[in-house]
Length: 202
Image (cartoon, rainbow, N blue to C red; front, side, top):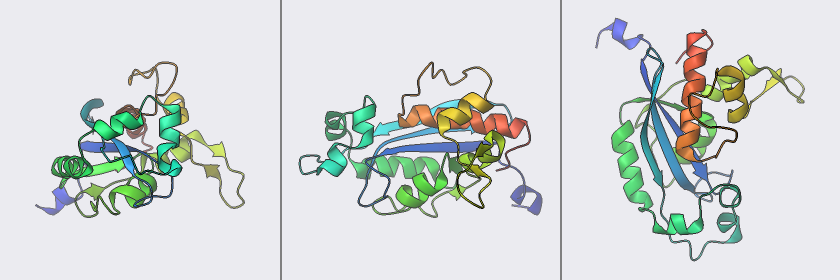
């Protein structure tokens, strides 16, 4: 690789989203749904690349997991999790797909630092992480923060999508379904639109 290639902006970026049993991160909380889209920021295209519910033995789960927000507010059920392919298989597939690639998410600190880089995923170093889409969207959406010394607060994904992206290219309709692949798709279009307007640099 020559030095020009090293500093070249990646055209293809993999956008990951996870749905989990809580906000604390692994291993207390678990990833139960993962989705990945491939966004070509030059062409402005988004492809759905990977989606899987993550399987666990849920019979001994405490309420913290079994009554998690994701099960109370989306169409994902405990039965789906119990019947899904096991975590080790999903991890293997995700690792093979993302190895050596440029990857981001809408909230890298959550999806990567709290889950995919921790036990039991251990994917830190597998791929190259680029600019957090949520952090870039913060300066575009400009939502006032209630915290002293912080100019703007992080926008939720649905707000960023409807504020930044014209129309509905992700086909989300009236209500975000909060499933991993759908959210990865929304985040991909937010990233592409910010890139086009000069507000996102990988």
